Image (cartoon, rainbow, N blue to C red; front, side):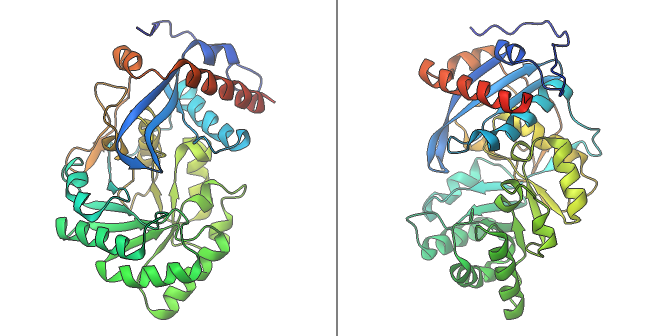
Length: 343
């Protein structure tokens, strides 16, 4: 069984405020959790969990990310485990259900795992699928939840003409907004302008264009979006995300990066600290896992998640421990990325 020590003494810290590598490695656990449905093309989600004096942090950049981009994810994990979160202004956070790019007939089963919800995010523009598949999926969601707020997420999967065509066709289903319909900031601005000129009532939300840019505020300056989708890990932590939202001056939706409850706790920390929270947040994704790392998973109850800590269970860490080769891969990445932060 993994050793979960009770010593909560403050670790050695580098001058930059980053804990020494040895402190991270001493409390690092790599797990591989099975998914209920394919999401981002995977059926197993690997992640590295860190325990520090303030609690737990999660380091789970997707494998295709380079070390420089992954360094933000480590900064966020260190913030959670070593420094904690800013004061909260709310004790619970409304969340949406998430429907992956499944066939329309599977939509009711996916929604059933989330319980009662008032908002649903539907994945669209999946590689290998057609706009007809997206329409059928959205139709199934609307049939199951006639009064729910529905938003779609394309993950930048369309070009500008395809996005305008798709959103024009999907708009009659009452879209709350469309998340990252095209990859670039310039493309988002063009889609937004074309929809507005055509009188198509679909708001544009920027996701990847915020978290993958060296200057996330370019989105606001370019008039490319009506709102921002912010994720704690890719932005480098709760405090940095709060600063970006404040400077952008746009409404924000907090979303997850397919995290365990440890990462969801950071998302809740951001959502709970935002002065305004006009939209349900995409923090209900633990329901997409077969199992979590804690016995008290952060899942929605009556459409919201109550703010509380996520403490991994030793038995679950052991049960879902990643194979040795994969553990070594993650620890090697941790060493490289830590070196970037320490530098």
